[in-house]
Image 1: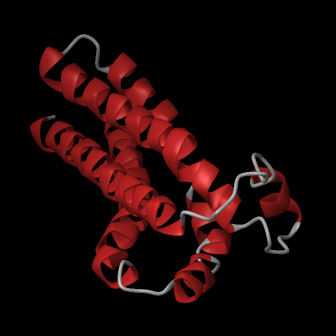
Image 2: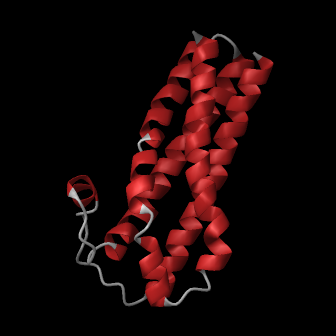
Length: 162
């Protein structure tokens, strides 16, 4: 069971790593865009990234389950727990830094039912200081990619050592 779970966790971590790394790799180019170009570009992310984002809460649960199942082996337990904690950090960065800015970027965009419900929070915030918001959004994705990479490496370690 643990081997299958470790494999599943690597797949889930890979999905989350792909999306966060994608955002991080766009950083240099997106920082050169004008306000209109940047805000137009932001709108392309939400359909696909919203679906892939479902992997994040799943990852927290399955990484924690792996740690719990490996509690008897400290060599495997601590990296598994570290991976779960790293994903908690990724999720926290999203909710406390990235998501409030998404709400600002999307307040004038007509979203479909699921996206509309997800991004309804905090629509009253102004986007007057868009450069500051852009920097927070972009750097939050670099931080998220870093923590996902740590989680992925920790999980890979447990798979190799096991």
